[in-house]
Length: 268
Ligand SMILES: Nc1ncnc2c1ncn2[C@@H]1O[C@H](COP(=O)(O)OP(=O)(O)OP(=O)(O)O)[C@@H](O)[C@H]1O
Ligand SMILES: [Mg+2]
View: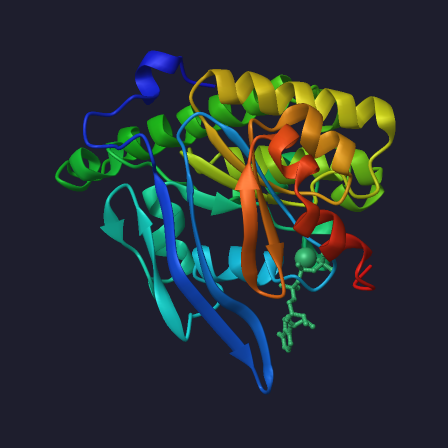
């Protein structure tokens, strides 16, 4: 992982992600209904809400997996609404993905080597250099170094030769996060990263997230475990029926009667 100082770039704002009036309909269902919120840099922000509130759809709209019917997504001050997932990831905004079936038949190392690579910054000067055998070898070596460094960070380097399909649920979550980090993102969206993860691994994954946050990474986390959200997030955004019901500190959100009602209102 890079040093914190390397991560601060002059052109970035303290509020990397802004979502304004986001809307998405599926047939007759309004999944996201005018969602507006911001995520501050270097925070672990929670996005919560009952089942069907629109959290995953919001993630898909932000990362370009879905196109919004209305509204904008701004990243580092630029409108990225409607860009392809690839372009959005290239700018440093990524979400984790479940390891697809075909990737389960590959080893952990192969999964890492195949992860999309964002070499923002480097790519510019590389593109003006002649492609020589030496430069290709150098890039491959750099990538391999980075892959090992990331595997070691997540304590899964001993699993490098294991098939991804043989990993436990928790180990797979670590691999998913390791893959996402290889793109060198600024902001990571995590949709239920602890689902199926045992308590020991959950604690470890959380430690990693906090460590990365301290380095300057920004996280937006969807999670159903309320205690986990309240104990780990500085800011919590509550979605309900496609809208932002309220947001604030964990204490503020917990004390909000609308939130209690939304959760008890038969949606869960
Ligand atoms: N591709 C789709 N086609 C049709 N309806 C969809 C689609 N994706 C989501 N929906 C609907 O949109 C609404 C919001 O779904 P979404 O998955 O975003 O909720 P969520 O907050 O992530 O819920 P959960 O906590 O259960 O994961 C739900 O009513 C869901 O059924
Ligand atoms: Mg969801």
